[in-house]
Structures are given as C-alpha cells and as structure tokens.
Length: 220
Image 1 (cartoon, rainbow, N blue to C red):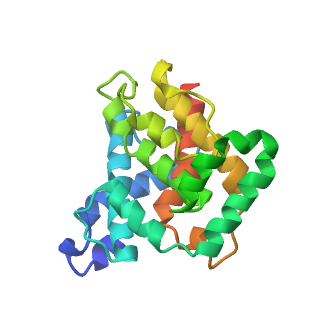
Image 2 (image 1 turned 60 degrees about the vertical axis):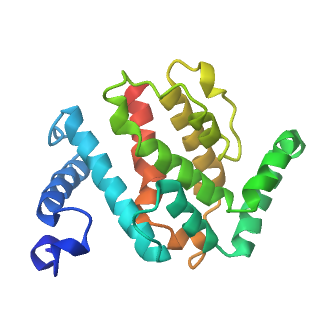
C-alpha cells in the first residue's frame, strides 16, 4: 500500500516497489517459520541489511533534522544530543547497580560514555554498527577487519569481556557481547513510554531484538 500511494520516489531512500516486495517475502517467512525462507542465498540477506541501513539513515536524518550526507556515527551523535539528561543518568544508575563493586574498573570509561548517551543508546549504536557491516563479511570469509574499530565499538558497551584483536570469529564474539548487554541492560530495564527508547529509530531497536541474536544462533 505504501508503494502504491507514495507521493514521490525522491522522498524515500530506495525504490518502494522493490522494497515492499522484499518486506512482503520476509514477513511471510516470519509469520510461517516452519516454511522455507523466501530464498536461501546470501545475497537476499545482504540486500535486507542494505535496505535496513538505508532506511535507518533516512529515519535518523528525519528525526534529528540532520544532513542525510553525514556519516553513520555523525548521525548517531545527532541522535544522542536529543536524549534527556535524566534518561542518561537513569540508564547508567542501572548499570552501576547491576555490576556493583566489581564493575568499578569500568567507571572511567562509563563516565566518558555518560557524557554523550545512556547505555541503551550506546548498545543500539554498537548493534547497528555491526549489523550494517555484515554484507562485507560475505567477501571476507566471515572475518571482521583486523583493526582497532571493533575494539572501539566493543568499548561502547557497558560491559565487554573479550579483546576482539585476537578473536578468530570477531563478529560472533562482538555479536554475543551486544546481545548479552542488550539482555542485561535494555530488555530487563525498559525505559517508560516517552523516554529515549520510545523515540529511537524502529530499525535500530529491531537490530537488537531480532537480527543479531538470530545470526548468532545460526552461526553457533
């Protein structure tokens, strides 16, 4: 219906008819998980991730009023700026309470992260960064590039246990860290309606709720 009623192709970040047919196929499979997926090819899943990335960027730019030409993290920073300070404090209080004294070694890093966003938004940011990098794994045998980027993304998480530099399956190790942090600090500590979580881009929330946990299960 959206594709048929679209006012202008230029209003959206991709052709809506192609996007709608892809969504329809994925929705049928989600509602009937015992049936075969619409296609088993890796390119199908890569296309879905690219659509999610384009829609995520479009949604963030509209929510924040930012220039759509900004980089991914620059858009995330614009999103961070809209979060009320009280939501930041509330989120980090939960982290400190749950981690207790053993978490004190993280306090300097937590203080730096608190200046910009709540742990919930940092976890969403890490999840989106990994998810939108997955198509590149198709051509790299499932290995993340051996640079400092992924340890930096890991440091966005409230609690990170693995040094990804020496991990043979870096993306799975990072995905597991993201899922664990999501379950510990987001799923069980949902912010009330009207707070930053309710205002966050829908696809960014879905990154943690469905996409990455499923990928970890399939690759395990």
